[in-house]
Image (cartoon, rainbow, N blue to C red; front, side):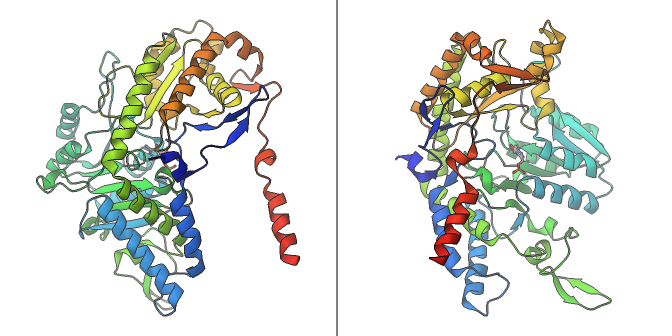
Amino acid sequence: MNYKKLFIGTGFSIKSADQKETERIYLDSAASNLALRSSQEITQEYLNYYANAHTKVHMAGKFSTELITWTENTIKDFLGVDHTYSVLFLGNGVTSPLNRLAQGLSALRPDKDTVLISSMEHHSNDLPHRVNHKNVMYISGFNEKGDYIGFDLVKIKEQLENSSGKVDYIAVTGASNVSGEISPYHEIAKLAHQYDAYIIVDGAQLVAHAPVSLMREEDPLSNIDFFVFSGHKIYTPGSPGVLVGKKEILARMEPVLYGGGMVSSVTLSDFTVADHLFDKEHAGTLNIPGIISLGCTIMFMQHLGMENIYNKERNLTNYLYSELSRIPEVILYPKGDITNKIGVVCFNLQSIPHELTSLILNDYFGIAVRNECFCSHPFVKDCLVEELWDIDDESDVNLYRGMVRASLGLYTTEEDLNFFLQSIKSIIENIDFYRMQYEIINKTHYKHKTFDNNIKDYFDVEKKIKKYYEKSYS
Ligand SMILES: Cc1ncc(COP(=O)(O)O)c(C=O)c1O
């Protein structure tokens, strides 16, 4: 199957700093992946029948209401949950449902004033829990010697044992946006439940790349209480954040947003919050086209088969990892074996700042990667400690506080990776030439001396609007 063709934003050419045309290669899927064409097109067609939901009286209102329910059911099926779970659409990304849970759960069990979080979390799965609880205990991904060990179940059990029943929940990533490691989240759930704690799994990086089943019939203690993800990380930009969680717990949480749609009756002196959980949690108008396009993507992914997707991406990731590890100048992070991972590979090139590597990849080779700390400062810092110590000139340290991340999507091919690997080798061989093309700004950033991408060369939004306007008068 030609996966590239399924997506918007693959296979177009961009200009490089040496005046060549090159195919843009997108290796920044961990930040946001490209849009699945079919869901955008189907949603465009749905707009013919668009109307606000919450009514079944007129045809389009009924259709919207039904399609929202269809998306809820599609998500439930995709994540292997039954009627004891609810699906909520909250905000724009994973960050919104995580904040919702942190606020709601801390208020629900105030005596349990502690949360257990791994040190390998994105800030969005750390800060909301920190600010809503009195105590935070961290599960380190490194041993005393500083070696990466990942998610250590023995340590987690010890922490729970030492917490005197005070842990409200464990918040852990499903797959890390730095190491790519898939966490043993079902095993962690089992431990959490043995100590009367809940579990929140941040599925931002997992949901598009590996099969997920939140319920384990044979071992209900390891069922996941709450799973969060967002549409833009599963090929559906413009769709909402999603919370899938146990209905019985969610129903006991007080709402945080008030307004239309979440009440059953209102007088000037009083109001009654709706009984129905979905209504209670959704004040205001939902992002209806976004929800429907997310449903379309998820059903499409089911047709492709999540096991197939996982295997395809795992083969490519292993290939990339093993080829990079053959290049002596490449430092891969974290240092340690990871067997179960998604397509996220973090690295640096010896003595070349992460930003410079990333800019050269973009400007000369048309390759989009991300650099710096990926909103995971503690984890990235733990990975880099050794190298930062080794820098002789202290004023250079800022330039080396970070790494480069290449992350794969369903559209990534072996040819893309070969081109990326050749580009890395070319950067290493010609680094003196490339360094001369850039100036350093404030000792922290690089800028090409003559080249920049100008949006108007590709997409002049105002010109497009004017053209539409003029056409409507002709
Ligand atoms: C593991 C993880 N959690 C949370 C987030 C935050 O996601 P969002 O930007 O959708 O809120 C990200 C984003 O990169 C992530 O990788």
